[in-house]
Image (cartoon, rainbow, N blue to C red):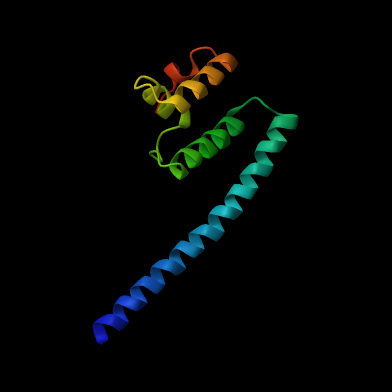
Length: 107
């Protein structure tokens, strides 16, 4: 019985930690989105808009099952070589915006 109680407490703590990360992460994402919007409107050049965009890019990649340390462009460029449909479409669109984007994506 004691083992079950400590296991239950462990799982409860784990969920509480994840809930705190959720709240902090959502707050950070909201702040980042406001900053990025301000950069888009008033100052699109510089390091901050690129850093924020890269963070959103990596977050989206991690949320869709990719490595949290790589961007969607890098993942799509790698998977395009295997013939993955979504990767081919995304790279075609990104290459239209920025020629060679997926091929030049760096980790």
